[in-house]
Length: 361
Image 1 (cartoon, rainbow, N blue to C red):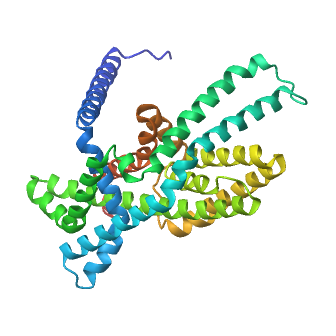
Image 2: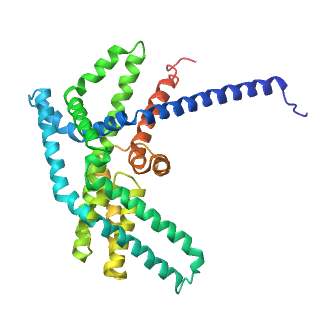
Image 3: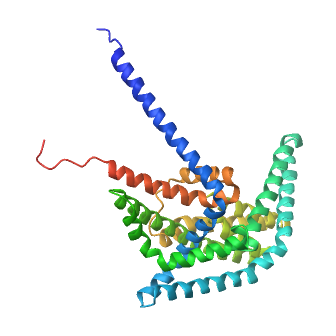
């Protein structure tokens, strides 16, 4: 018997496909409009984001003080002042020396790339100069641009990252209010929303806050351990620019996968230029060992629960964020992807059909 195509089912399938496509187009249009609005409001959104990130770092101490009888305003004030003092100390002790050596760091990376170019043109590879000139020129330009952005973000701390002193002050004030009134936000939000939104939105916000806090605190701790261990190895080998390389390693930890590769590549190039091939290989071995310890020991111990993102998703998110918003996009890509995953998992759980009662057909 020959099966025939049902015109009724075909039309129904086409209508369903058209409806789903139209709904997806509307969703993408809504996302595009949302991103456009956020871009127009970036002067307000960016300090808000920075304030939230700073709050995730300082909230554990504030919570400890509040649990021991401190008033919310007093605890928030003390933690904010302590954070400001620590930030000023970091700027004085680390950012100023890094700023004075940033040009030397960039020149060392460029010289290291040129040495790799000469090595690739000679035996045993014997790659033609015409084949690699364009690629290495592009790499030099990218290295100069990337290092300039990364070092510039580190040099003056928070004020440069948030695009000026005014934005930095606004972010600090927002952090103070988040620390002071944060626990009252979700109950207030629940009272403002109608119906089921009064339950769903605060639940998603609470899960998103936990995920964001886990990411920021764990990446900061892991980045600090990486910077100390790799910096110690560079210091023992006598590699110059130890402090800028350690700071670069710490900052790069907030860009998973790509950040570690970038910081390691820079450290190996500096060792190659200053100390020769043997020390460069030793530095490479140190970085590989530290990265293995990070992936298998540090992060499982420090980060109690993962972000629930596959490594491929993290890599694609960082690449997309960097292409859309440069260094800022690469820093925010993984937290945003994790928050999207939180929302999706919650929606999927709410849409899941309940399992049937035992004994009921």
